[in-house]
Image (tube, rainbow, N blue to C red; front, top):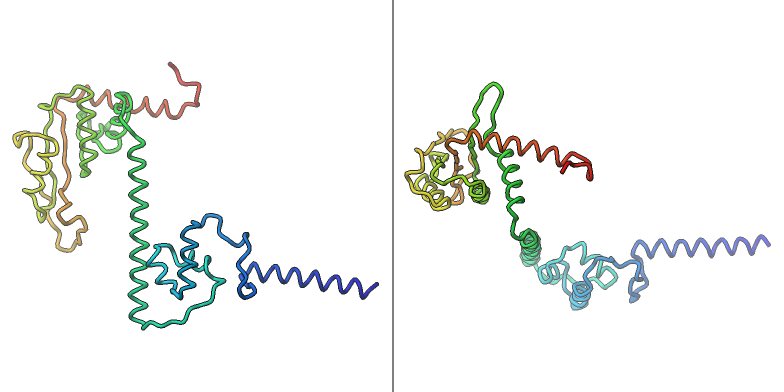
Length: 271
């Protein structure tokens, strides 16, 4: 009886050891991995192609350059296949690895752009109410505000993002603010292309140069390393609305209304 029990225990120990070895990736030669070892999110076509290339003797670096997938994924897909002989010099292997990384970065950028484009298309046209609420939030985040110790009830918006400027102007149009009430000022580092920036902003807002105040130049500190350089740097644009005290009060009141509406429980907002 003791002998039978001991033999049964040995078999159970061997079975558990075999399961542990399989989970660690140790498989009999020529035997494909079981289904539970495959990554459920792996793309079947890429996996099949990676295995095909590995059987042809391709290295991980070369497969990565060809398919654009990560080495970790390739390793998981082909780890049961025989390892090919390395027939390349260190320089050749380094070049292949570099191309593989470049391919990976390209695929990442393509995925990034696809995500952004999908999100952009999902927004669609804005209703007047949506644009109104968006403009109020935009101004309260980026525009000038009145202070109890410094009463300045006037509308002034500053930004370097041309998209933000375009949305702000569309919002002012929605509110019926005439364009001749607007005054613009360019703020930019003195070492930048000042004339080019002035032309850029004038074209963007479709305003005559007479609507622009004298450009404000920021003096360059030689001890400071500037990162906002190059042709894409055009400084900031300041937009001031003349005779805007009443408009400012409406903006502030609307913002507090947005806060109230957003913080009240659903179903308890007043009509």
